[in-house]
Length: 333
Image (tube, rainbow, N blue to C red; front, top):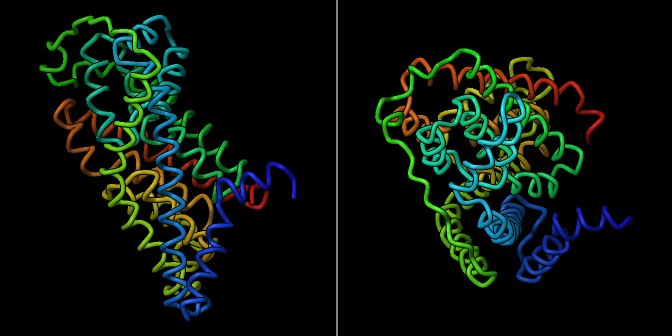
């Protein structure tokens, strides 16, 4: 086993933990090869694995994020123009909040500060779709190539989506209270290393409390799919024989609310049952980027025409990415 394979399987994938849980359940007399035992093993393993990765990732990303408060982020974005501003904005979104709802207040702040609308939308698209957590978690179950390509294509959607919105000059479709809010330049105090560590610890605890219920629900659904739903059903709906599987997955995913940590176990179970890779990733992107609660919040800041454009651009991008992954799945897995 090579070094990277060891990291992917034993460090990120924590296969040793799955084996340990399996041995423990067998010692208790539970047949892990059966539906009930297999479901219990899947549930315990995924909850523990995702929880550990979640806490480590949030702590690390929050520490990095402490160097990019809103005022500093605004100044960084203000230095760039054109497509480069969209690219930097999308990249900045990878180290900011984990779900679409928590990205919206930053989007409003950037917009009221006078940053170009397309730049702020590039941030709004990338922030929930392609954070650093998604990269590491996807690596743990789908491999390095899939994870990296997923993040790159997510950034492409964010950059192109923001650019389209910028070119259409949709500023008149921002609610007036956002435009009139103005911005107060408050210089953020320079934090010490100890203060950054405290901030990262608090962010980890707060985010864990918000996310953990979705992890439990996501893993529960994953265990149900993995051990109780026939493979033929999944293949019929989301397999290669259904050319509309990607579109269906994107449409089903949009009304739901979860984050990357809650959708990973569902994706893992669907993949093991024969669902196509691009179909699964389209579902994940739709859930994390276009959840119904986030769209309701966003409607408070922008008018229906701009909201419809945002949803349309993201949905088309997600569907295209899904079909691309399906077309090249044999090269990736």
